[in-house]
Amino acid sequence: MARFANLRRISSLDPVADHEEIMRISSGLEFPWDYQKSLEMALFRTYCVPTISGLLERTGEFERRPQKRYDDTATLMAELVEHGYDSPRGREALRVVNRQHGRYDISNDDMLYVLSTFIYDPIEWLSRYGWRPLSRNEQLAGFHFYRAVGARMGIRDIPADYDEFLAFKKAYEQSHFVFAPSNRRIGQYTLDLFCSWYPRMFKPVVSRAVVAMLDPLMVRAFGFIAPPAWVGAVGRTALRLRALVVRRMPARRSLKLTRARNRTYPGYPDGYRPSDLGAISSTAR
Image 1 (cartoon, helix red, strand yellow):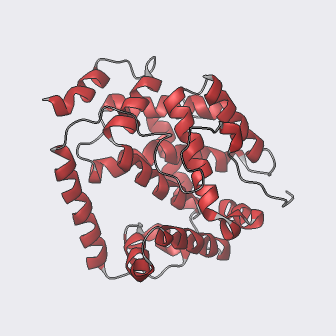
Image 2: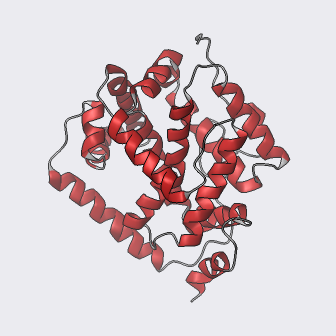
C-alpha cells in the first residue's frame, strides 16, 4: 500500500486548482525516469515537422552542441515543474525560454504542436511502459499545467478542452509529418546524441533500438530505415519488465527534477540560476 501513497495524495487533489502540485508529485516522485524518456521522444517527434526541423538546422545548435541544447530544454522545463511557473525561478526560466523563441520566426501552430507533445506523449508512454498508467487527475493536471505555461509563452488559441487539444495534435501530425532533408539531418544529430550516452561499441544497437520505437509515420518523415520488427519487440518487452521491477520498489521520497543528471551543468542547480541556461546562436531569423 505504501507504493500507492503518492497516488492517493494525487487523487485527493483537484486537477485544475492543484495541477502544479500534481505535476511535481507525478513527474518528480512517481515517474522521473519515464517522464524524462517520454519527453526525449516527444521532442524527437517534433522534428518530423519540416518547419521545425528547418529552423533547428538553421540555428546550427544541433550540429554544434546538441547535448547543451538538450540539457537547456530539459532543465528549464524541470525548473517550471519543481518551483512553479509563477515562482521567481519559474518566471526566470520562462524569460529564458521566451527570449530564445523570440529570436526566431516560429509559427503559432508549430508552438502549439510542440506544447501538445509535452502533455500527451508522457500519457501515451506511461500507458505502455509505466509501472502504472497515469490517473485521470494526472492527465488533466498535465493539460492544465502546460496550458498555463503556453499562455505565459504567448502561444495563442490553446484549446480549453483536453480532447480538443489531443485532436489538434493528431491532426497536425497527419498533415505535417512529411519527409524533408532537414528532418533527416536533425533526426540523425539526435540519434547520435542518444548514442553518445553509451559506450561506442553500443552505438549501432542504440540507434536501431531508438528507431524501432518510432511509429511508422515518424520513420517515414525522418527517412530512416525501419529495423526488423523483433528489435522493437525486444525493446518494448525490456521496458515492460522494467516497469514490473519499479512497481515493487518503495515510493521515491525526494524530487528528481532539477537534480536529474545533466552533462552540461554539473551539480545543477547548486551555483546556477535559470538565466545561466539557454543556447547561444548568431544565426539570424
